[in-house]
Amino acid sequence: MNDNIVMEGSSLSKSPSTDSFLKKKEYITIDFEGDGNLGIFFKKNKKNQMEVTNIKKGTVANEFYQLHIGMTVNKINEYYFKDFEYDNFMKLIGIIWNKYHEITIEFCIPDICDNEIYKFLQSINCEMYYDIFEKLGASSKLDLIYIESDDLIDIENNDREKIMKTIKRVESDVFELDDI
Image 1 (cartoon, rainbow, N blue to C red):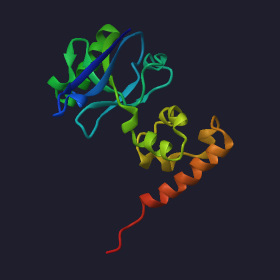
Image 2: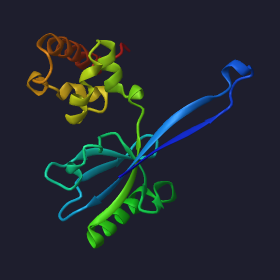
Image 3: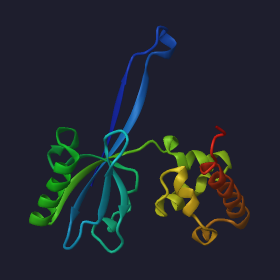
Image 4: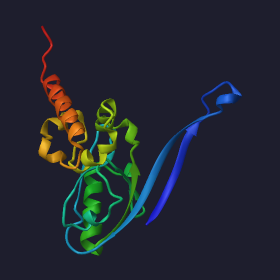
């Protein structure tokens, strides 16, 4: 497995004290190999990226702790996602996996601070539990309505209660209609 970190940016300032602003983009490359299903579910997200939405238990992908929901695909073997239509890229993954039972995928790791769930947890001082919500598949505030107290058994009682009370408030806000 190779870990690559790429820095992207440009000079935005007029003063020498704030020379440039860099946006950190982290990439991780995972070499998958094995029999059976690869086990990664994707969707085309709002930014026109190929995003990991689920990792099926008992599959090759489930064996890699580095793989997380929310990562986006940069390239498969030597093929870049940006050069393909989403459906054609999905077909390419299937062809490569079914023929060779091995594939190298370079993922872009999202900035956790931009994640809606992370921001929600941070607002109630519970961001240390983000990985639990990630494992449950929660990727937006709308997903919170599906979280139940039993899903959060690994969270301290006081924090679990605080999260559940806040989720109930978020749930009621989601369905609130504006007065016409």
